[in-house]
Image (cartoon, helix red, strand yellow):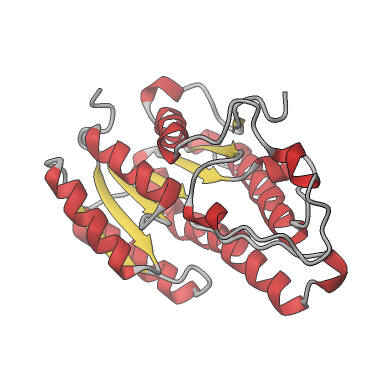
Length: 249
């Protein structure tokens, strides 16, 4: 499939996990990729992989907590490729805490990276997306739809992303911009490899957020993300798509 021939896609969190898988999938389908992340080594590796596929790519280190850096990243994409057709907000962080032990600083960090960072990229890209009648796909989570053990900050941030996405969908429907959210559950990513139980936690609680079909590769999510912003998803906006192997069925 070459659903993204002639299109420019901006991917956050592109250095690893779902973001990397998404960037590679879009490159395979002909898209020119502008990848953002804080991990410069991962971005360099991604750039080599994308070029090996015969696709164009530019990368930029960007801390999405910083308003100025986000604005410069979007401007850099437009300067390099002349437009933005699709924005994929994948970057995020995860931590697990007993809520009564969660510090305000850690709460704020998760909300700022995940939710505020997503907002900042959407805001910076929207005028360009209006010009191209483009698409936004935001990465939410099954944590936004059901209780996530010890994940108060993460779940709140992902719930906020889901609400933001639905709002964008209705706010910009008349301008031809679509906005959708993908809600993965139990995906084999570096962020999940960092999982550690809080001290004294019930080891059985995580069973409720495990997929009955097992953890999936990031490429499974990337394929859904790609569909949503392609012509195959042309009549989908304001939707939340679970990619969880039946976890919440």
